[in-house]
Amino acid sequence: MKIRLIVLLILPLILAGPAQQRSDAADSPGLRKVRMAFTSLSAVMMPPWLAREVGIFNKHGLEVEVIATPTGVEGMNALIAGEVQFLQISGGTTASAALGGADVMIVGTTLDTLVQNMMARPEIENPEQLRGKSLGITRFGTSIDVGARIALRHFGLVPEKDVAIVQVGGMESMVPALQANRIQAGILSYPAITQAKKLGHHVLLDVASLGLPYAFTGMTTRGRIIREEPDLVRRYMMAQVEAIARAKRDKELALKVMGKYLRTSNSASLAEAYETDVQKYMLKVPLTTAAAVKSVLDDLGGRIPKAKDADPHRFFDDSFVRQMQSSGFIDALYR
Image (tube, rainbow, N blue to C red; front, side):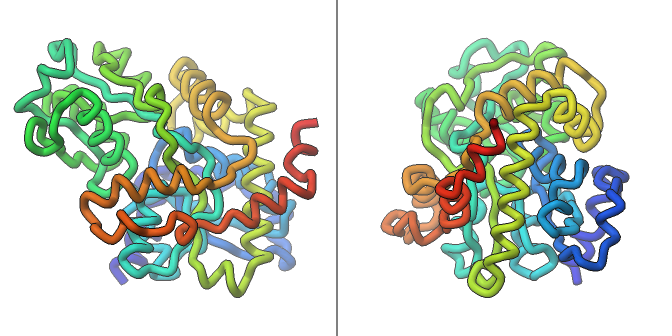
């Protein structure tokens, strides 16, 4: 019941109404009703938003209810409980749950590196000044947590020894925490990065510039759904891939949808998020790779010993994306 309340109540609390637009087709009895959750107020979550708003899900025979959860932890709990059928979430959260015995599987990766910045307050001029201070993340076990540890180790700092790692909640809480000096640095995604820059905070590290393969964000579902309803997964993935193509080809539409779900009309913030997350890093072919999942497992190995020897292929099913690729479906979206 607690999980049900989280899932059902978070949407009005966070979004207060986006995703209410429905095409006339959404009322058709022929559409399969599905629930999905996205797990961060970040531009990387955009594909299902756009697929919902412009009727792409409907085109593929689905009526999808789009739900927000504060972080991947709550989203994964909802998926495991059967409250949602799909998640837009980090590969790290999925792999961690699977290692714990959950029947969950990555079916697509939309961004295969950590598109995040380590940002600091104005008085923190270099990474060494973070010793003895606090670095903010959303929640432990999320991709933001992973980015924090990678960034600190990159600078020769030991996480939780040299620098405290502090949970602040959702990404929307990161900039206020910096402003209030509750944290002296934080791991941010877009559009929070742009907002922080405007307030005088600065980038210490662009984590994506390290070029590390990592299953950062993508689509996850339950293994049982893959086994028993592969056509549902196929149609859901086709809609997401079509939404990515539409976003890359129609900037004005993508910005409008992002602004609605991110609840901002700041054109500069939205434009920077679009150019970085959608145009630069979002994959046209959201294929999950063993290398990207291995990086996830390598990171988890410090907290979950059995992750060190786990086979990356155990955690993803790339057959749906490969089918779209080999059939020419994806190429046709860009002609």
